[in-house]
Image 1 (cartoon, rainbow, N blue to C red):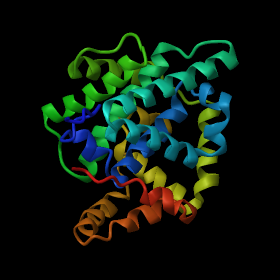
Image 2: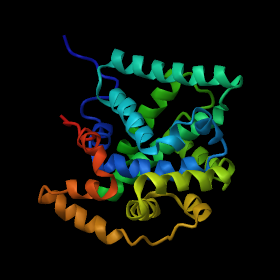
Image 3: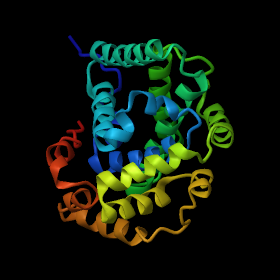
Image 4: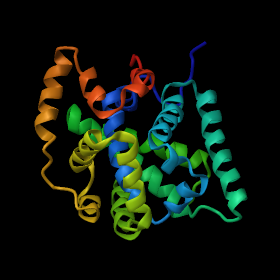
Length: 256
């Protein structure tokens, strides 16, 4: 009997989410955008993100990879678990997370999956970009989200609208960046900012006053060389603290 997977074994999504370096750049971009989102107060309600932003990153990766690499029923249970966790948070707060906020998270994961892979690997073709969109749209549909786009082109339009309408600088932005610096340390925090400059769209860079030209571009060139030499683990050691060594090693998945 052939095993059915939520994400096809040959999908570009497995290449994107099976490589630790790509995942780190996805979350570099996401960390920038989360700090600007008008619904970021929901992340502060639980206290998990400001208290342990790196732990939150690895927790999110765990859920994402469970969806990308598991057989279909296990992946569906994972998505249902995510929906249940959000419902519990809503019940505790006595109100619901706005539909647009759910869509924002889904949209940024689509965007940064593409941006990070293209930054570190190669340009994706139209079919591959559509695959990225389709997988996350399936996740959104399973979670019961409303107002989702029906095509990659429709997503592109909605993504730009969301970037213009749902982002702002606030006290949460300032505090969250202070937490990033606290947990990463001064040197790694600067690396985070440079990484964000490379992967974020213009609207995010403008709101955060990130330099359009990143000093990290030269490092990306070195990284591509180091990958050929099988020493690309150095990049991760630079970006994340040593006490997360096991979590960093677990980011890579065998892509078959």
